[in-house]
Length: 634
Ligand code: ACM
Image 1 (cartoon, rainbow, N blue to C red):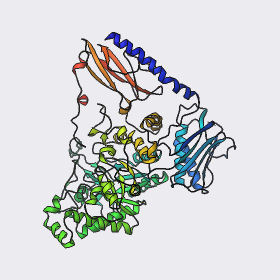
Image 2: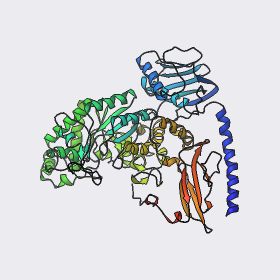
Image 3: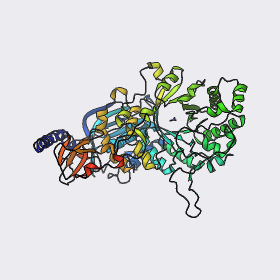
Image 4: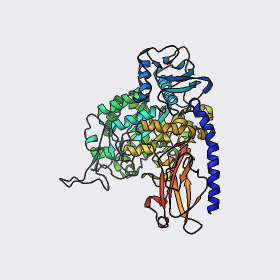
């Protein structure tokens, strides 16, 4: 064993040096663009431009341009080492120019061009949104390499960029667990800097109602609180259980909407109807099928409580949608529609009488009747209805948009019926599923959706022809928060997979390249660190698998790198460095040994060292996190 190991080590070092050589040469020249999402067109040219202490930013022509100039500086942060003075015009030889250009026609409001040549940088667009995205790209160019405090050398290039899809979304469930306005703003910033433009906000569910509605105060007073199952704790003075409560005030909602709008993100509010309605029915039992008092749910899963379809309940829902239309200026309103199991409607003589009176066929017909009523209300407010793919089970108004979550079949079906569709299949884009098999993953749904799987998602199914494909508005990732009590957990779930989503949503299909994406991804990590985003470390850390070795008093160690980045290790207690041995194949290590392992890209460590003390005793133990999970179906 020992002989084999030393052979492995020396060949590992040789390979590591070979791999390092071209990278060093590139570092000595100008920065390699590390852009996510990859632009639709990028042409590298001869020459370069050095951004230095004298470079000025000219973004003075009108409020829209001025705002982008300010936002560009804010993205770089107060601690960015170069002044990039906004107040000066800049010499013609050393400036960054932002300007609107309406002398050409742009592919979309999101489109922009960015040119770097020897005299400076020029960012042009036809709208504030496109110009903002140009600023995001320039920020990423400036932060693509190790910045020297005094200069950043940008390669000459031409970027002509526009997105593949107009709906580039993230859904956050604020019903199961509640996030603060500041936490949401931080997410909106990170979304905008990945050119994501739709924030779907899930505001009501069985476990909480987070939206104030005039005339219906108990929705938030009663429906906004639940007694947590398990370890919610008790009040020290009274001994009463401590409720889990929260809702957003109108002012807070307007604040979120305005913050999103200034970053060119539309907020799509969701009010789930007719299922996922327990919190609302707890507040107002007359909205439910039996009329009996119930409690806000503290269990996850599909709950059987549905709204009834009485005229008074339709009036209530009209009040809710009117409030939504007042608070949210965007085009779309999401009315849920998912998982409305019909047991209560089936068992209720009153609901059966309602079905007969309305002349609809069955319970699915009744849900379709409700959806049509809601669509009328939304249309009167100038809005468009969107719902989960279950709304296809009844006759659906032609203008309704379908969000395909039970795979992509619902989306295909909807397109064939002439509806617009947003793809968000649960087996690929539900980011509450774990992303690695690491023992360090937090609680979550026990199946994994690795980064590569998100990256490989194709929003336009093969079953659709080119004309039908125009009905695919775009793509969205969802984070359900049953198992995410804190924003830190939400961030862990979203990042880094949100970067793969961004590229799926933005970049041309033919340019999608996972290997290239992995070369660009490490540059995102310091940007997220700078923004205080707790992205998941697990994809960037190795998971040692330790078994008894073939020889006595040895261990066999397998080091997996979840994303395939280079694994380096030491067995002498020192921290691994870029010149430590590279891992290729299972190691046979003598006991006792301190194993330190770490993943590297481009000479830089990607996350903290993983340390294992290997002893005869440690080989015989497993922590419960290290036990394999019993994974069910998605
Ligand atoms: C859903 O996941 N129930 C839309």
